[in-house]
Length: 211
Image 1 (cartoon, helix red, strand yellow):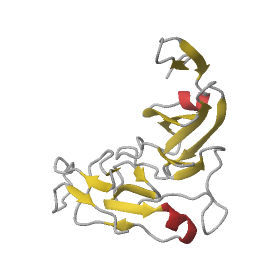
Image 2: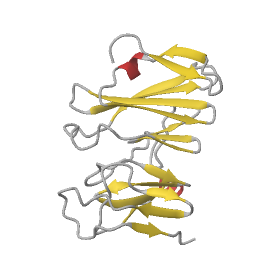
Image 3: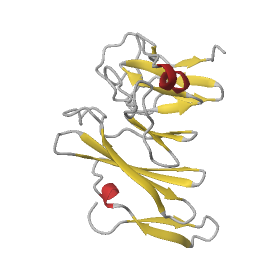
């Protein structure tokens, strides 16, 4: 984005401008995507661009939704140099209660401080094995995504104990938000048949919780 760019909030009732704030320079660097998400009293902007290491850098800014004031901003690399062609550059952030997951980092939504790993004080990273062209969805304490196959990761257990995620094979999800947790179910509508990946089970599925 070139030139001055502002974030604007309008009244739903009148269309009147409630506030207008310039976007931070880090967000203005976005070339691949720019997402906005609202949650309670927070408005999140997330964008990405390529960097000198041929990796994807994600920039995140958190605003107060009533005033437009900037609460915090952060940035991080995706951690997979040379893979900006397979969806690594367009991952959609996910809000889970008081957490903001902007893959592969989890931030505290209130402060922007990265969540620490269970093993050390280093930031916790989500390292999806295999193909990870799909993007994240979430429900309750669980993240859903593609790690070659459809995968569920219970953060309430993983952050505390480091237990690995559970996979479903021989199927795969589509290349966007394809795992939908809603109404007490986890649904995976068929979205893989148009890809050249060779997975034998191409069908829609729905799952009930075991507990």
